[in-house]
Length: 242
Image (tube, rainbow, N blue to C red; front, top):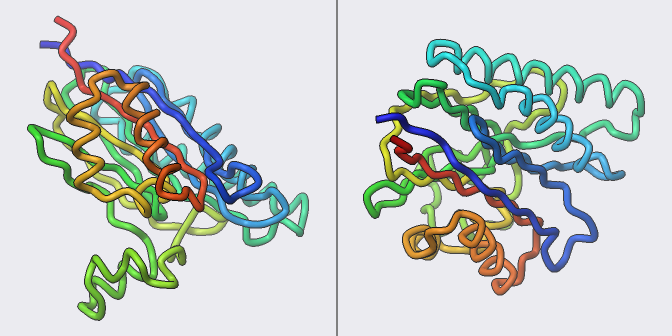
């Protein structure tokens, strides 16, 4: 059995924002979502820099080199964002989230890198599980037992991230997992996860087999919910091509 990754991605500026500061990569070996922040059009630059730094990783990579490849990509992104801020002081404070998944050339392993509040979900055997943990102020409150996860969803400071790629030192989360045929991954910016319930995400992932149609349907649900933020979705399936 040879497992492969097949992906599709879509992005929409939403109904409120004047531009789209999200960026994505939906490739053969790599999928990634970045959600930029910062004024003066710097957010879209930061997310584009992050995806541009990660895109060269979309190659057949040995499983023992996956995490190192992701770490290097983040170092490159961090350095390029630092340089961009140095070139124009008005970009100070710009940054981006990054959630990226890299599939091994053997199909036997995958690695995940995460910083910020974009998310990676795994839909496996009918069950949706959030794999990443949000780097946000409200997640810290949840961890401390001060608010519930439901309260976090409507908290006035839910958009405050505790770390992002901003050109300085950052501590991303890395993980490795064993893929299974039939796994479906959803990577998304908070423009989706903040307005569409997890049980609805699971329903769409289960019912919409075509990846591009699934991504389009998820974005449509965010738009119907008011889409106050940019919405970016990548749907990636683990398939057995033997």
